[in-house]
Length: 180
Image (cartoon, rainbow, N blue to C red; front, side):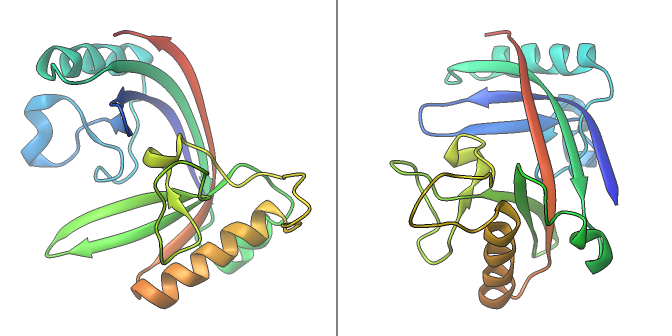
């Protein structure tokens, strides 16, 4: 089970919010930040580092509406045995591994949310576009599936349609402080 614990900053725009973590790719080292989905899901170890990078991002991007610091905890099931441990859990996401022309990305997906963009052909939406909503227990009479069943269904559809690797993970994002 892969554990991810640390801090990120959230860059808010009118229709989408992006997560940023520590820069790990050479082309982004000079910026001190990189998209959390392209940096191998690498958060900042210290809140102070996320704060400095978030301030720098806010200065460099006049069009950003808000920059918010957040704590992030994830557990990623890396095999079927670990996946079984998620059956009773809530706050689940699907991670879609994309490798297009040498550009690697870990896209985070959750449920489709009313009045938010979704992936029309898939039963889900990118977290950055659905407000970081995860698969949770609902009181819907129409859909009584567990969070695990919903996440597993999305994962199998991604694997079937996109022919790409997938993982299921817990995802806890705690907003701490708005810096812009």
